[in-house]
Length: 185
Image 1 (tube, rainbow, N blue to C red):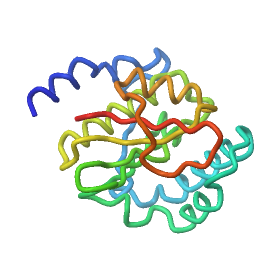
Image 2 (image 1 turned 90 degrees about the vertical axis):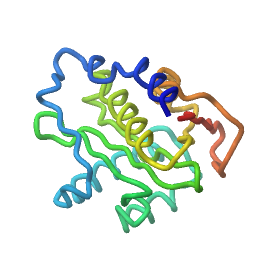
Image 3 (image 1 turned 45 degrees about the horizontal axis):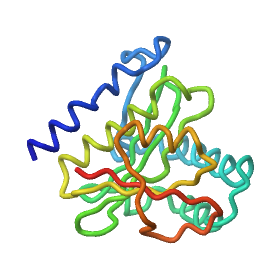
């Protein structure tokens, strides 16, 4: 574990990477299970994410499953000890989120990473990725998986910067340009 922790420390500039107008003092990282009153706001945020994916980007596959899952959000997959769902508030406003779900005995999946457009480019995505890595280092998992789409250029770039690498498909993503990635802990 020491080797993995050292790798993480070398890449752990997440709080330092926050944009100057997004100070650490104005940011709250909240585990959804600790504040269930946020479920409605996060549900709205995820609807925005769905509209972004299936409206603005024109993705097709997965739409029905995404909105079906949203009706039962957060669902048991995002509960400790095998998962979690994190929310970022900036100045009291929900700005972004990310979930972690168990994939198999040694792997989890990073899901539903979304930052509202007004908060992009301020280091919040990097902060969330760093938190996911930190959470997973304390868990039973040996790797973090994710699937995304090439149309989400900023997200793919962020994941690369945070130490994820592209891998062969590990799940079904029927969109035209899927990207599969992993981070080995």
